[in-house]
Image 1 (tube, rainbow, N blue to C red):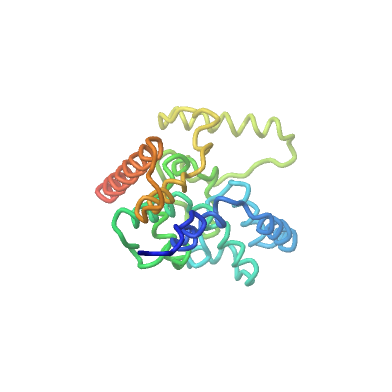
Image 2: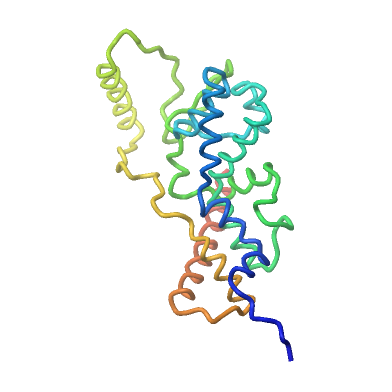
Amino acid sequence: MSTEPPLTEEALAKKCNWWWRESFAKPSQKKTTDMVSLLQSLKGSAIGKYLAAVTQGAVDLVHPSDTARTADIGNPSQQAQGTISAVFEAQCVCSAWHYEVAARLKGKYEFGEPWIKLSLKRKARLAKRWPDPVVASSRGCVRISIEEDFLPQQPGWTPPLNMSWNLRLNNKPLARGFLKMINQMRIDQGVPNPHPNAGIRRRAWGWRDVELMDIQKHGLRPLDESETSRLSKAKRKLSKAKAANRDRKTNT
């Protein structure tokens, strides 16, 4: 007869490597402070402007390992590289959740290890496979090309324009002129002005779903009705995301 004490949830968290409790579930004050100090130290530089735009949600973050963007940000220092990595990973919560749920349902990790230990290249690959359905279509309000060639046209975006704004004017007439131009382009493309909350995720990803899968697998305790319902919803969510990914591949 076994004399080992029953497994606690804290012990299970360590055994199953619930890394998200530290990485995503609990925002790090140190990371926030590091970002602020880094932006101040890089103020005025190409990478400083780029990071500032990313943190303000103005542009999409492409990790500097993507050689196509090296002209945008120059050669970042080790400190900057680490901070960019942290911001990059914060934009991958959706794909990380899907990766961990899929591992529980299959009984193994697709790439042999938890998401937090994957290379940035693989994390980027998963982020493209499983983009956040709430914010994917609206992330970033501007695309910027540092290259000589023009940006390609994308559905739901304005045509690439070569323009210049009169900085001697007050912000109000500039804003009116900008919105007049944007509204006309919306009409031309048949894209309505969305609700102010569109594209903003108000509810965090349910990492408790993944934890409940581990609790059930290891027999820590029976799940109640609401917890069982959560698992069913999580499985349906993963199936829906897989179907959407197949559709994207078919249409490309």
